[in-house]
Amino acid sequence: MQKQYETVFIMTPVLSEEQMKETVKKFKSLLIDKGAEIVFEDNWGLKKLAYPIKKLSTGFYYLIEFKAEGSLIADYELAFKRDERILRFLTVALDKHAIAYNEKKRALAKEKKEADKTIV
Image (cartoon, rainbow, N blue to C red; front, side):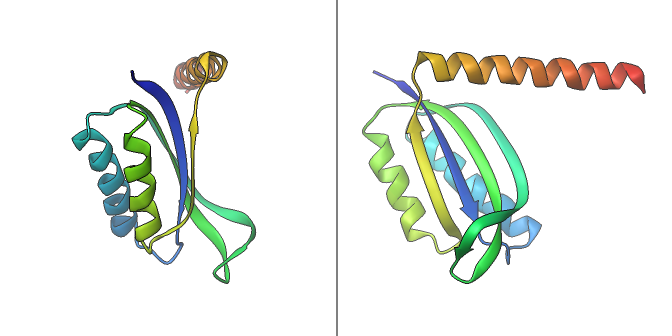
């Protein structure tokens, strides 16, 4: 049975834009190749870390929300651990309330974006 998950990972800030996109593509294709369905993704950009990690104070944040079998998660997280470009990652299984909250949040963001377009 497929469950819905959300993964946020932080990439090292020394990556170029191209290297960052390549890293994201690697983890997305890993999910797709294993039969997962990507529901939503969001690039949060370069942000300050709450505490230094490997003597770095910033990192590129990226979020991927997906539906997959539970057995996929162990392989997915192992790939994060093996990649030196990844500083931290966290995968969370979403319950029905979290899924509803995420859908509502996306709908409000879409409405706001469309409203901003009509103002301009």
